[in-house]
Image (cartoon, helix red, strand yellow):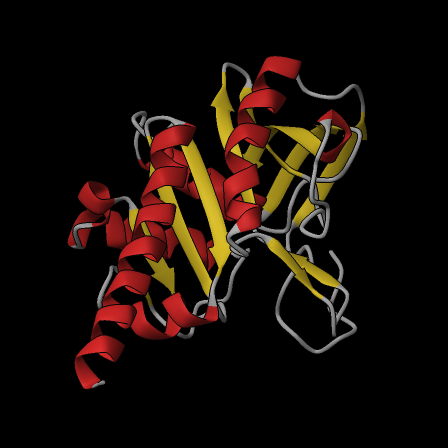
Amino acid sequence: MSESPTGIDEGYVKYDSRWTPGPAPAQDVVDELNRWRAPLHAAGLIGHYVEHDVGFGNLSLRVDDGFVISGTQTGHIANTTADHYVLVTRVDIDANRVDCTGPVQASSEALTHAALYALSDDVGAVVHVHSPELWAALKNVLPTAVEDVPYGTPDMAREFIRLWRNSDFAASGVAVMAGHDEGLVSVGRTLAEAAERMLTVRAEFRDAARNETSGRS
C-alpha cells in the first residue's frame, strides 16, 4: 500500500496489492473498455488533477476469470492501450487484498469494483468517475454511501452491500460516495449500460441547471 504525498485522498492504493507482471488483457476486452472510456474522459469524468499530478476515474469489465480494470494512475492518458489495463484474478475483501496480473498494477479502486461485482451476477461492468458538481448536487439524492467510509477499503465494499439492499441502487445503478470527494459509481449488465447511466445522469443534471438559469433570466 502507498499513501498520498499530496494530502488528497485519491489515486493511492490502500489494499495489499499482489501484482504479477504479465501480458496485457485480451484486445477485444480492451477495445470495449476504450470505446466507453473515451466519452467519459471527454466529459471530464475520468481525468487528471493537474495541481496534484494525480489521476482519477476508472472502469472495469467482468470476464470469465475475474475482471479487467484500468491501471493505477492512468486518468491523464487520453487514449489508453492494452498496456494500461490489468486483469484482477482474485480479491479477498476481508483481508484487504487484490491479486492482479498484467502490464500495470490495478486501480486504487479495484477493491470497490470487486465488491460491486459481488453484489449480483447481473453486474457485468463498473464505472467510477469524479465530478464536483454531480457529487455536491446528488449526495443524498441518489443512493449515497455514508461520509465516514473512505474509498478503496473493506468498509466501502460493505457499504455498497447496504445500498444494494436498502436503497434503489440495484434498480438505478448509480450511487454517490460521500466519503470520497467528487466520487460516483455506476454499474450495469454491460459496459454500455454502466457508462450510459453515468453519462445520462450528467446530461440530466446539466439540462436541469440550464433550465433553472433560464427560468431566473
